[in-house]
Length: 262
Image 1 (spheres, rainbow, N blue to C red):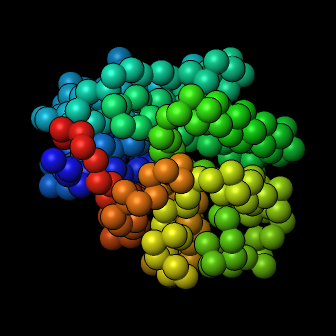
Image 2 (cartoon, one colour; image 1 turned 180 degrees about the horizontal axis):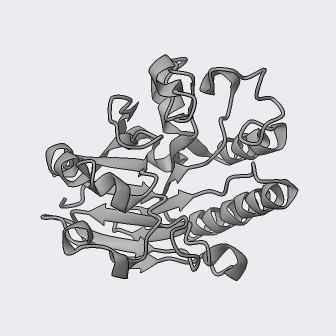
């Protein structure tokens, strides 16, 4: 018997900070089948038991070597068959940006892609990370895996994906070379689920908090859920939960038909 499961992705800008803002109450109310978190800014030993094991969930974590930086986690109602927190490339893996969980029907990767705004070296790091990740998921598809990858990609793909494209045309996050990577990824058969299922709908997933941009909805869509082409017919809905507060990002997600027993 098939079931539709909900998969959410959210950059929380600090798991301990959002915990104080009612994160666990939100999780108990929303009850996604899988929740992928980026920018946890914490290691496991810094977290309370209620964050590590909310009722009904198994959690997996990947933390940066540098304290209070980066980090990703996954909460899932069904335990994974296998878990990996490394792409096997030390220069990327030490920042805690990657977490892979394998299920019967698909491989899911939660990724906090680098930000390139700090200068040329970080932009190069971001672009190298992009290329290494695309190589990684292409190898998975060669092994006949269905692929879902999601998270904070840190790039708006098209002009429709940010409020002020002309003003940001030379800013990392909307540079042609960054957008080209998304073009290439789509051309290789990975589906931007939100754009596919919502056409030209204008919604954002990140706002600059310092300028009060969220109140004016001057935002960017930089958080995505991508699926390999073989999963397209199983996507029932793709959405952005713009009303959810607590971070400078809001959750994005999909509803996916599956045979898995969530």
